[in-house]
Image (cartoon, rainbow over all chains, first blue to last red; front, side, top):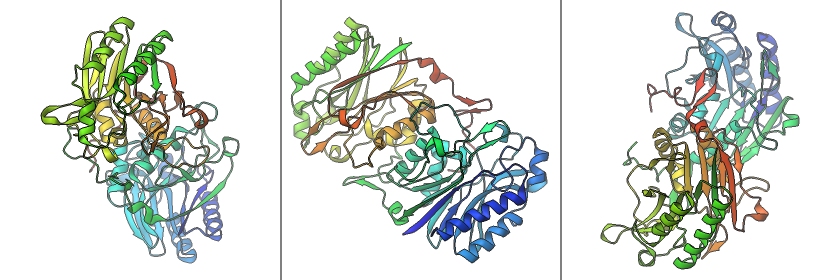
Length: 273
Length: 273
């Protein structure tokens, strides 16, 4: 059984050192609680709500920069796999909203968010390559970031590449919802997990940043679409949290949903689109 | 404002006359309550759990048969649009799990379920053509049936064709779920509505048939992914119900989800698949 953890944190915009320290402490705490795989929020070293390219550049670092170097050391010492978001400096002054997958062998993948949300447009340069799906000692882990997950065809790319678990650093802005309803973002993640029969682990942030309030909707969902951990109740969503779930990741390789049905085998490539 | 109704019924396998009478009564009741669009369950004239092609053939009728003729008369008299499932006899002895869209102008479309569930395989011949999206006096209505909705690429075909409302006759078999959780089928419908920013109206059945128990998960969902009516609580899911919701179907033509984002415009056709 693999223990997956998602860390709900509140990165502070611009506070690189403080954010790194808080993320490292969360990884330590998760590992102490038994986590093999730890997911951190989107842009968790820089903070999310950058307002300009210049501001983003000042917080950006390369794929082998301070943040991922710290994660490498943590991963090696704790034996964990870490997936977290950081602000990446790319070629020619471009900045990317990226996520790294780091394990004791090093930085295994860096993914650049392909679908940009709101004010990310005009700040970040979107990615053009498939979400990575990395064979780790615990199973195959795919990486997506927030708004990417709204596009079922992009989630399918990760699922088709064999992801057992999709790990998603996220910053979900809060939107109005009827009392008692889960955030629509969580509902979509549940549906995504069940449609592809994969585990999904989302690390969301909480709190407020500039004029944005966050959902605090971190969740770990099983291939049947039901949460194994989270989301925390709305009353508690504005606090740090480490959610853990025992996941038998091999379950994600069984796409059957009944004696005669299989969500992959039943796809029809002969139909018009 | 358009009033949409979904009728949760319990068709009795093989009781064509009784099923038609109960469906007609439900349409009358829904119309009396103000419904402009009425959705009935899957295979609602024949019953669902047919066990062989021969049994299905004995219950099948053409697209202009007794059931749709009755719906035409009801639609004309009540001024409603009716979407309901029936067992259709096709060419060469084939039978189809079909749904008709009927309005005061007649039978506007017949759709044959493209994705077959469990024992439908070997009984029904699956459809090969796109879900219809029909311009009605109330808006554009797309038609899908149950397992079709598990495939996001097929739902997208209906959304891309301009559906304001996807009407889905359904028979959801009950599956284990954690206490307090909505059926995963309902969660997927919520996600589907929010991903495409369309209304979705699902008429499910209730009760048991042969060895199958049904969810009773009828629901009407808004483009934001939240239910406008239903699903009924688990304690009440084994009873007939007519759920109604006021739907401003024009909302489904606005695909924006923020000042800079739009679920259609943001799709990326340049990405690898």
